[in-house]
Length: 198
Image (cartoon, rainbow, N blue to C red; front, side, top):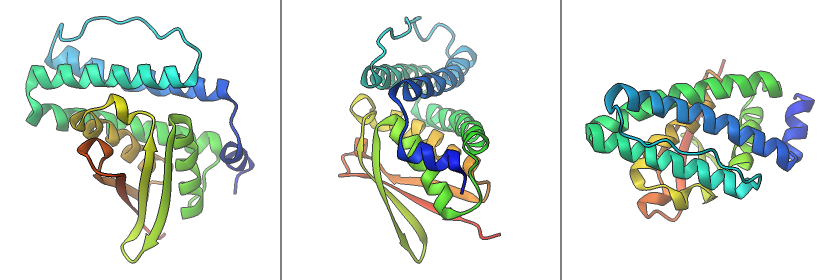
């Protein structure tokens, strides 16, 4: 296992988390803004960059920006079109993030390394989770998410595609799919993770 992955799993300074949140914010906003430009020109007012350096404020500002963009897309093209458009665009963003993290952290092919890398990503976002293994693969359960108070059901459905794409980027043989969300009123988010054996 990579020393970089081990270190990032154990501890990451706040300034690095802020930098990573900015990286996530920038790429997810760019993808959603591109969809709005194509499908709903003028559908979103410009907004200023968050000035706070506090991690919690950065997470909240990013989540609120996601919500504004997804809701503008839904208003412009309807829910039936907006959700698949958003999910497709953000899955690609997540895949690119996952590939980048794989390279930067030195993530290998094992299940353990994949889950450790997911832990690093979720720690940055303020997401607490556990994983259990069963005959159908792994079950990831999110008990706390710092973003969910700012998301609606539809926004969460769209943004969860980033996580699903990131898992595929971290390990091309892996797939993750969310089946339940806190924003649906469920007590926790639940996703299945499967990894193809080489």
